[in-house]
Amino acid sequence: MTRLIKTRASDEVYTQNTKFVVYTERQLERIAPLQQLTAEQRFEMRVVANVLPFRVNQYVIDELIDWNNIPADPIFQLTFPQRGMLAPEDYDRMAEALMREAERSEIQAIANDIREKLNPHPAGQQEMNVPMLDGEPLPGMQHKYRETVLFFPSQGQVCHTYCTFCFRWAQFIGDKELRFASNEADSLHRYLAQHKEVTDLLITGGDPMVMKTHHLKGYLDGMMRPELDHVQTIRIGTKSLTFWPQRFVTDPDADELLALFTRLVRGGKHVALMAHFNHWREMETPIVREAIKRIQATGAVIRAQAPVVQHINDDPDVWARMWRTQVRLGIVPYYMFVERDTGAKRYFEVPLERTWQIYREAIQQVSGLARTARGPSMSAGPGKVEIQGIDVINGEKVFILRFIQGRNPDWVQRIFFAKYDPEATWFDDLVPAFGEEKFFFTDEYNAMQEQAGA
Ligand SMILES: *Cc1c(COP(=O)(O)O)cnc(C)c1O
Image (tube, rainbow, N blue to C red):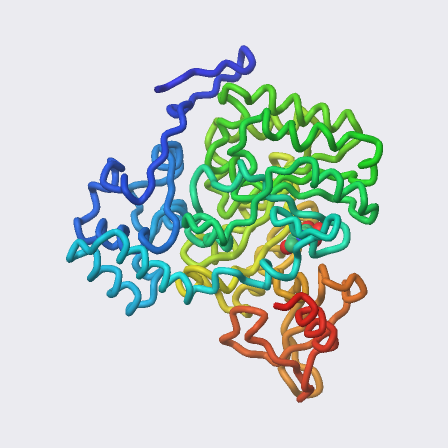
């Protein structure tokens, strides 16, 4: 269905896709442009999609992917499974089972076996960050850093499309145990009322923007009560501007959603849409441009963050152009992340040294207004750790690191040094420099882990 949306007399926005149509592993064969691939390539996708989550919608297929540039196209890499995402022995095992048309239960068992090896719960998320209310744990919430509480509404635990590199992939494979989710607006509000140190609520998922507006209202309208006045910022983590900008333009409850943002802003909250953009190509369609304008007209601010991932954006020019585009559109560049040590990381990971070079070479190309992007940052167990640089100190080559966020707020802004390692791709690969046995926070962090039973 093609619909012409008239926004202003002089400004017409076209989109072919106003009805949300989505494909998963079982419907791979129905995705028309995939027919240009060989049967073998399509089988490879099936093998991977039986282990890792796969979900893509028609807008992404029709309007974001350049099908003349397959498989290199960054949006194709962002959304479609690739053989290299599984270790060869794991790939072969699943391929063999599919080839002989094994029972569903056997396929499931093999998939679960492989998934277990892919570090489904990075950075101790399950055990360590669970807040307590009246002596009971609140499973749909995480409270790791003093100022910010994460909330995972149960209706928001999918996405319009899944990113192939997602660090929350384990939530999407149907295993309820792996999922944090809550439908308890009441316990959210009560917890926040008891924690005056919290200034930010971050609604996340999945993607909270898959929720109907009336569900979101249930969580958010209550935030304007006087006892929650200390929560000044409502952040919404979302990839919907990339995967379904229609959410803010043509969806039946789009206007109601924007009215909710306006109400929150008028009620004194800062509403921050934490948009996930990996590539400037995600911001080029007329409908995403319209969505951005509509969100901004409510007084909400869009901030942008993403990890550096191989095959998609491991190129400083891509980041520089992305940040420049964001500034032009009034979006604030926020974080550049290091890809986490989970899921298909073997396919996506970039050495820390290279990630830092990409950051530096990208930042050098942009004006100060785009240098609000911090990073590269690793969301590790002890905190968010930024790679500040690589240098030689007292004759030893080192990584210079700094806490942007810490489990203990006292760690924030402290600098520390790790031995240079050209192969390191994640925090856990690093060891202290200068022959020291541990980092300054190691003992304290170990004690925190023990206390949490992690
Ligand atoms: C990144 C993150 C936050 C937010 O940190 P900011 O630096 O304030 O953006 C909060 N909680 C968790 C668990 C995080 O990983």
